[in-house]
Image 1 (cartoon, rainbow, N blue to C red):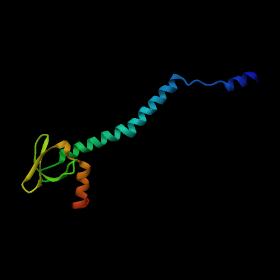
Image 2 (image 1 turned 90 degrees about the vertical axis):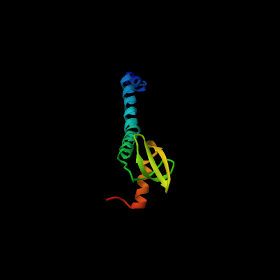
Image 3 (image 1 turned 30 degrees about the vertical axis):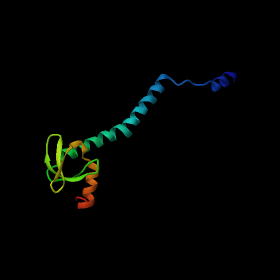
Image 4 (image 1 turned 180 degrees about the vertical axis):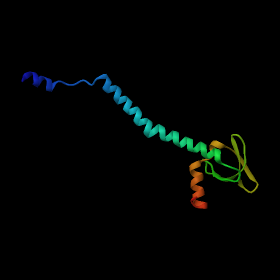
Length: 110
């Protein structure tokens, strides 16, 4: 009986394998909840910018609304008012804001 009593009171030490499994679990959680959604969002942004064409309405990350007048390798020439054009980097166009703007003005596409 005393041996059983001693064994029940002994503190169990977690093994090295348990620690490794816990670290791997944390990495998997970070991947699925943080890294993967960011990669998916970046891919959608890149695809959106590649499909833009001359004449499309856009919104920049700074909030400038305009229409694409010319497309170069890494830039757009955007007409923001009659006879007012600015050259912007493609990275300055916000896919999320542009889609929201189009939905408000043109209605959802079917």
